[in-house]
Image 1: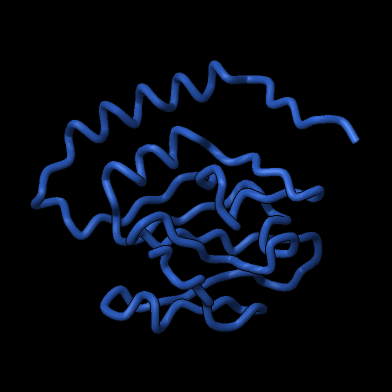
Image 2: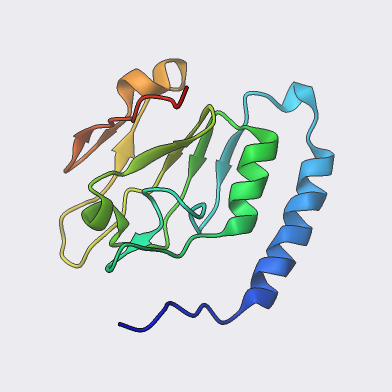
Length: 136
């Protein structure tokens, strides 16, 4: 097995600068905040590829840790829910979602109610979201 080598770190630096600018524009009145990023945050159940390798964005993760939106929606790593067995994860209090979409015609989608995000979040194939107990 070869170690994962992500070429294109310049893209990470570029997105990091853009997220810094966006972060400076956000004010308390912009809460609750819902974000949509193509790439999922690094080090979650949402960015795993085969071989248990995390390939998500470190810059998106830093933004989510700093800004703590209510919800963050993602895609890009289509196989991740099949590899990790989860379509939702948490970074602090932020719920992050990647519905995935493996080959085939079956719809991979999620639905939720913002007023009861954790209790209502469900996937068309995987059912209700499950979350690990918060670390103490």
